[in-house]
Length: 158
Ligand code: NI
Image (tube, rainbow, N blue to C red; front, side, top):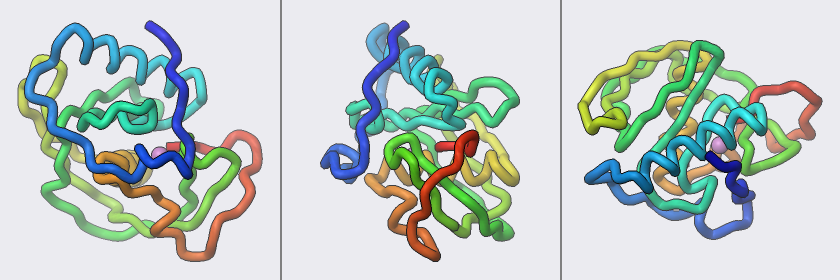
């Protein structure tokens, strides 16, 4: 495994739509392992493939309950609303207030390309929305309600 360089805001790749994954090759598996290592190394709660320069629909998340890998994830249901702080490893040193659904249901594929559903509330729901936005070339900075603020140490970054 290896730590990959995280692309930061201003890099065009973060604004592009990602391609669907059709097959998990050895290369894909290495990418997933590297994404997890890169996320943990940077104390992130989630990471999407374009953040390491790869335009594929792959997301990793760990909100403190163990790693989740999502391939070609799609939000199929949302409910409720939460308004809170959000940050991103690709927007270092900043945070902003973003409103997201409080509950989301996602359909995705695992590393064996088996389809599964995942439901998340609170931080997991926020992370799922945030990471899936990355796959569509969207950053949370386009959704902030009161501009960007400077980060204090120890805040979650997605
Ligand atoms: Ni992010």
